[in-house]
Image (cartoon, rainbow, N blue to C red):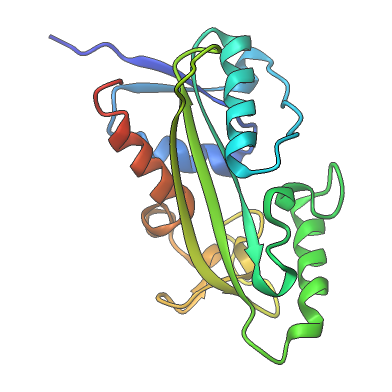
Length: 202
């Protein structure tokens, strides 16, 4: 008997995130549908934490699509900037800022601290909701430690990947092969934790 393929909407229009999530779901009986296929607009991220924003996005996608939804909220925390940009990573340089705008502002912001290693970490919270009124969201969280480089390197990532140095591999996140990044990244770790929790649900 062929198992039924479950449809799940991903509450993101970020093509880099979608590629990573689809790759990680490749071995599961799941059809990943992007929220853009339902013409769902991105909800305003008014939460004060990654988990609040992830739940907001998942509820919005569920309500608009009628399907179960997965949402993530992720960002980079830089120690010398007291954890900024954090939840504001995607709009660090202002609403509607490009990846390049955000990256350049980050490099400018850490210039006064270049006499030391600039430790940072990517954070990711993944949330699964069965429906818009789901009172028990399934939540998984993971962090990926690294440091901020002086200049961007690599073409394989998006966002802050070109300046996020991964010491174990002696290169930036944007220089990693996609399969390696999916194995060790904050999003890869969080999604595998989420999949483990969902093993009896999907």
